[in-house]
Length: 280
Image (cartoon, rainbow, N blue to C red):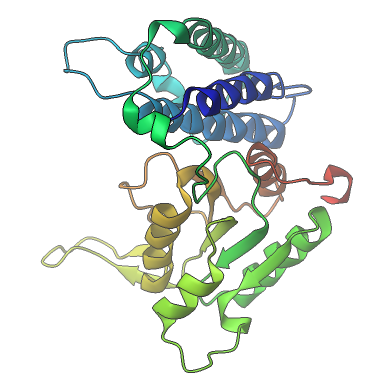
């Protein structure tokens, strides 16, 4: 990565850390939004540092390892942020931002590779520094849930909401339609509703609730095409979650509507303009 591009990306991420303020984290929904925004910001930083610096041997330190060694295990798999965890997460955000500032201040100690110099002036896709231009929705058979989320997104953001089934086929296969409409400048919202049941072959335990196979496939497609920081999953209570997609934001699709603030946090962290006043 060219030095100038890295400087700009680090400076922007440090500035974004100031937006990760729990504010009035007095409700479950507000704390969920804070946790979701942190995860998206943190995952972007890890990917940025991984892309920016040449890999080193496992026993050597690097900017990526120095950033990644900060202890955040209690927040990596947490479904809900507890009130007593808020101060710890605030301190973690502050320390991670300080590490980023330290990396930025010491960039002159690192040599810019010839490959990085050749990339100057060359645009990349997707450009993680530019906000998404559309929101792509992945869904199963629950049309009620789809309509609810679609209408919510239409209220809070000016972006175009793309639902694959509403787009003309024009002789295209499903994978061709995905490639056309899930553009690299999109953000994906995946609805994992309890449409199917299943279990491992040979087991006699109760069947588990699962999302449709097309939803799991499109989740993987979106993660690979857009990056994990541009994918948010709304999952119905009890639905089996794929463990392979670490870094993707999982948000409980609760009947109380707490998912709305959490999803707003993910959209905002991705650079999408949202109007929280229209969330209710």
